[in-house]
Amino acid sequence: MITPAAGTATVPKGVRLGYGVGSFCTATVNAVPGLLLLFYMTNFLAVPAWLAGVVVTAPKVWDLIINPLVGRWSDRTTSRWGPRRPWLLAGACTLPIAFFLVFAGPPLTGVPAALYVGLCFLATATAYALFEVPYKAMPGEMTHDYHERTSLLQWRMVFIGAATAISGVLAPAIAHSEGVDGTLGSYRLMALTIAIVLFAAMLGSFFGTARAPMTGAPEGDRGTWREQFAAIKGNSAFVWLTVLACVQMLAVSMMLAAAPYFATYTLGSSGATQTLFAVLVGPILLTMPLWVRVARRLDKRGAMVVAALLFGAGTTAAMATPLFGPIWAHVTILVVGVGYAGVQLMQFSMLADVIAVDAARTGRRRAGVLTGLWTAIESGFSSFGALIFGVILSISGFVESQPSKPVEQPDSAVTAVLIGQTTVPALIIFASVLITLKYRLTPPGEPEPAASE
Image (cartoon, rainbow, N blue to C red):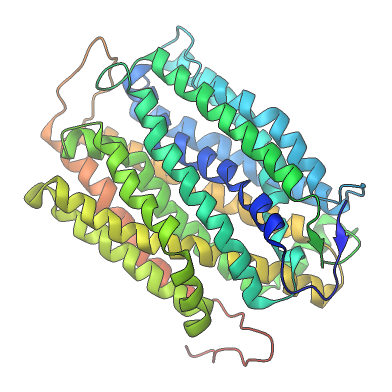
């Protein structure tokens, strides 16, 4: 059951760990399909690149419906486990199964294979919403303290780093264990392994948050959808944070989709996907205390600007990979990883702030609705990264294939891979810096930045 803690500032370490382990779900479900699904369909199931992009994107549009619904339901849930934890358990019981089926690889190719994967990915998105929306709503309800929320969420980021390492290093290693590009059987083994990890982590988070403090509004908002959306529309910090997250994660999702192609066609080895991910996620594990200090010194908005600039600088430098080779690529992605770590931490910490301020201002529990909308819009928008990259590949003349019938890609397709991995994401992430300046939510007692900033 939840522990009332109206004046609690510090969240117990056991709860921090229990909450953080749930991020294995967040990182894995985003990273593995984002990294491998497009490549799996084009190079194993002979699905045209543009159609594969649609399959990756379409289920995310469903998030726009299901995520706010789950958020609203969790806001109104009354149970001895609190409003959020029953939903964590529901997600734990359904998501691992749906995830495995995405990569189960029935004997289908082309359009039938695309339809199968699309339906399974839709089920995965639904199960993911059951867990992720209530999960993301919890930090804003655990403490009133502005900086304590950042400290709490650094634990989540550490687990995200570990999970991303599993997703980006272990998953490709298993998928490609039976040859350079792998087989359908190795992809099934990868999916089964990741599904077991998901189940263990999600159950761990359910039990680990049993004693989580609850400082939010005691009652869920019973207003109509129109009343709730009207209130959210007037919440400028929430609106700008949502726009910011959408733009940043569009760049991230595009780079994830492009990574196996970048490793295969730019670096000349699909195995480089694992080492690239290792240098990307390493900073997430190592730089969290640094980013917490930067946020305290520059405030969260200033820390976000610094993080996005580092992200963009690394991505821009990666354009020179054909000139300087694989070592240069790994160094530039390491810089991207440092920036990405800060971007992720600031996003989640800012969202927790917005939730806490809304509850204090309205006296209503709307964390689920706010988180559901934020997650749905951000996830749906960012999924266009894979679609954009798929369209770029199709325009460039990329040829889909099967392992038994490898093909030589034209030079135009190889160039398109580089552009999709570096140039376009760099432009997107630099645009997010300008958007960051529109976000205004300062620590209690401090004046808001001037509108001219």
